[in-house]
Figure 1 (cartoon, rainbow, N blue to C red):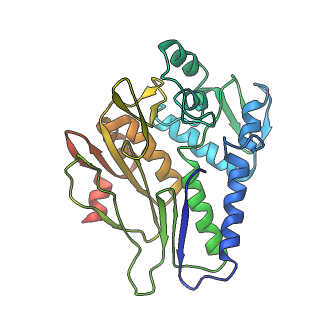
Figure 2 (figure 1 turned 90 degrees about the vertical axis):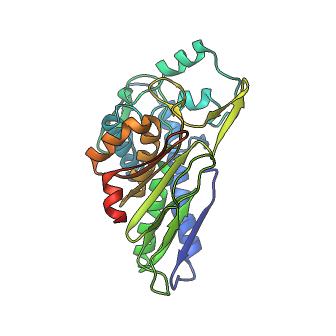
Figure 3 (figure 1 turned 120 degrees about the vertical axis):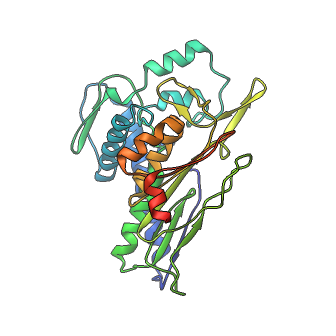
Length: 291
């Protein structure tokens, strides 16, 4: 996945590392758009209109991604591989700054409306490409946590690429406390949360991006416009029982910006949004958790 992972567990078995590697290897084999032989890459190469069988994990991630795409009005979209490649965030690596015509071309070849799913099978109705970069890490955190529970572990903290999930407590009886990263240039009080049966995922413009034409561009692409974000959102963190959902919603709400806080309230999401030049927004659910 191009990132690191860590697991802290109380009384882990000797085979724990090998078990975790097995889970992550399966996910890469199913969902990596960097591996030509992955299920996702083969799906993207299949003839449009032909139904493809999906492994259970792949089907779960796709179903969640399509549901969040619908709920967010397309602010999250699992079928924007062409746009990710165009902006240099795909397997092809850095690309020249795209011209308007190139953005229009990639935008026409993106969009969850061109993906149909029927349980354990799906198909493309147009030559779009799936890209699970905004959701697969969260799913991987959940999958590792599920395997740890299967090994009889009840107290652990899983982290993959900055997305975390905590279960149980530490040996000293304390919960798994996590400090949200401070964001340069945004005035906000420190935020510490206890991950006790909870996950947290964060999306931020300070983590990854590129410089072009004398300015800094965020790594997050708005699937609706096909362009890098310009809404001044510095960071968005989402707490959720499912890290998969926290991951995808963090991306969606980062795209929507402050206007997305009303959606967060309707969806019952615990969200912290940091906006440059404005400050901090907390959803009602997060405020209730912090009280």
